[in-house]
Length: 212
Image 1: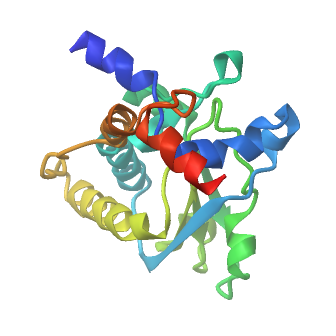
Image 2: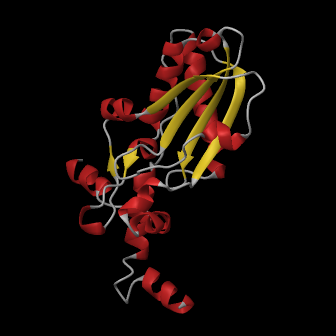
């Protein structure tokens, strides 16, 4: 419903607050956050259109990957972007590289995110064959901000992306089982169950006071 969509855009999971606070300390800090996760998939990945379509399929399936966190009045909120806008904002780099690739930190490149306006996902595709950018031998690097994913997220993410790519490479549209919940749904549930920290009667306030 419209009200549900509005509510989903206006809340965030409580765990995201801890990821946000170091960024929110000052505006400059938002651009030097290094809390990314790295997934490295080494296999033959051919077809530029198929690769791009598979990543867009991933964005469409997982709302959190197309979520930004604007901070009106200093309080961060989730805003889920329409897929066309998310596609336009996606940061994708095609890079020619020697076959002997550098260390993982060099593969990640610039890991700073401005999550107020930037997607929490980036794609870096290294062409490592002898044909430069046009080679069929690639290393795909996916960089995710920790506000959207953690190490446990990498398995499902890579599985979904490769399933999407396998379908697109044959000219088909991937068919996934429906997602039972999205990240924003969990955020809403968590707020409803735990309450607000500034409400002394809430579960989260009582838990926080215990540890103070």
